[in-house]
Length: 226
Image (tube, rainbow, N blue to C red; front, side):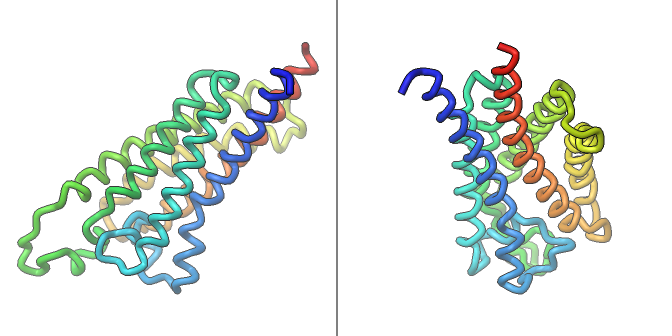
């Protein structure tokens, strides 16, 4: 296999890992549906389903570990051919997602009645519980970087169809907007933080699948231009 063929195969594997990681990243919603929504999905964040006190937490933890590994692998496989920002953000997002899974919350934080020591309030957060907030923040920042790459790529590639071009150009700002909205909704359960996060997660996953398709199209476009 010559170098060009090897690079092409490696890039294809990177795109496949990115697409697969995006699908697995959203799989928690399917899992909670199969479990008949053990916690209210309109107010409960997805990471709460993997809290230490949940008997089914391994299902959601495994999904995050797989998704994180696939995102990290996609960053390594795509490498510098896709610039510096994309592989960096994919690697950081993948690592942070794995760290998220390995540092579960002590309890579902949207449900005060489930807090250890409730109602006396005698509870000290574990190191894992505290670290989860850090890893989640890092993952969110990396996700915003991935959205930025998608937005730039959507603007640089000639649109195949006018409507598709418009959708692609507003997709990343919409996902980032949902990410910021999700942070704001944490102020009150009445703002439905769980629902907002699930919409944002689905949007981000769809954006990553499209990003994988756009990297393939950009590769072909560059080849035609010599």
